[in-house]
Length: 323
Image (cartoon, rainbow, N blue to C red; front, side):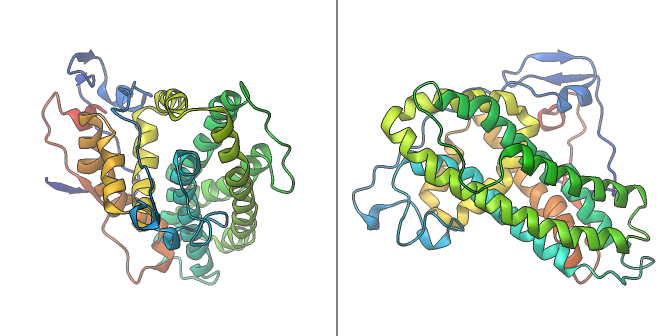
């Protein structure tokens, strides 16, 4: 596929028509349709992974970043994996975030290195903060209320709750928004704030994820079937829409390659409807590698990256552009 270079603040393409996932025509501005939530067809199958022994496990325990699961306590079934799929991605993105912030120099030459802090701030605002907000909202409004239809959620012991974490996320976002308004220039004080706030957020977020991984799987195992959870996940996917998938599936896929064997990763992709998988593999994952990760990692790079996205075919009914 052709590749196009993109500017720091890319303007979205527009078109007079777009298409639904079933091929029917959407009338009106395609860019507005692309920004809307859309409706995702149901996943084709549940992820099935019967485990007879450790040699047949589809997981790579020593590739996990979880403090609950690992070589001494490997994940065993859908009850364990349900939270690992998003949590492993979040932990890796947070680790990369903290590494990048640590690499920022407060005495940087903003005539030469302004792109480092600017790209990082754009990644945080446009990608990471949206992913974390969406994850928390899905748990608060869909997933945890569903669990509470059959089980009682224990009180949290030590971790911050979603509201407190969201406040931290928003505080960091406010710093990044200010950096963007200044186009990365004169940001020494903002860098100092990021270096203070991001490690604290990561610490509390890791504690939060740990408690969820300790608390939720036993409740699922005792009260629900995988088919019941699938129905709940369909509600989450419907709420996320295609814009949510664009933001979150690529880091999930990248993380999964570290903690699951290729056959499980393939099964994860194969569970998606054909048009969605085409978008994920043909556009979302490549764009993550060439336009999102370079922004996240900008403070650590030796030179300014050339950002690019998979190119548009420029026809009126371009399926990826419409979505």
